[in-house]
Image (tube, rainbow over all chains, first blue to last red):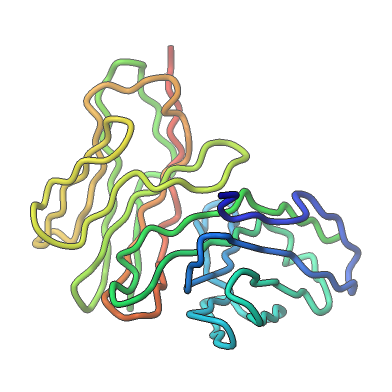
Length: 116
Length: 114
């Protein structure tokens, strides 16, 4: 199993550009999520999904869109990049079923995004 | 409000010394508690978790943590630190709902002196 994969590893954008961060998992996990990591702020949840066709907002959703058309993929779209979105982005997935958030979340290696 | 606080942003210990990383949480329901470790340039890896039963839980790499409900704490410990333990450590809390959401603390960076 490849686990959770993210592409690209690094990206530089100009203000106003759009792009999609890709995330895929091959563990048949129901739950997938996107976090951003900023110094001194830990990981903050952007969006999450509990299954194909179901998404919801996390703590910091503004400026980001997501969709979940398949169990495996959960792309994160930046509609109009801003310097405040410079961050490291992590995708994570886990089983859900009846155990809720007690299940281990598996993290991808991250995407380092810089917005100039 | 639900939150996790890691009071120590940065800790330095000597190799072979003991380690304790603090974590305090605020959560309205029965909490599920986690410690994750992040090595430089890597994603996060689960060290250990607690959701019921024995309040002292063992994890990987020789780490353990103790859940103290009265103090709303879930401190991470290791008796003897190795240079390879240098990393950033995150405490997280979740609940019994089926959303799978976790709330993370700010992280503690551990530096190990030779």
